[in-house]
Amino acid sequence: MYLTAEKKQELFEKYGKSNGDTGSAESQVALFSFRIDHLTGHLKTNKKDFATQQALLKLVGKRKKLLNYLKDRDILRYRAILKELGLRK
Image (tube, rainbow, N blue to C red; front, side):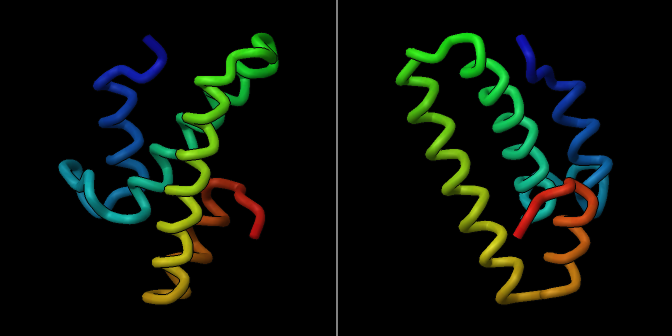
């Protein structure tokens, strides 16, 4: 399994406000980005896996909505998470 509980905890510690912060927009965006990277790698080897392709598109949409929320609420947090994750906008 690519996403273990330890990996999730590590992501939440690094990008969240505290250890148990699993609901903040930054930690969710980081988790979605990790999953998107994994699915992108999977699709490079399995080009005809359409179920994974649909899941990837849904995750990208969720991440985009969260980033738009952050941009509207707090532009500094938005810019910080983009810089940390290396995302383009």
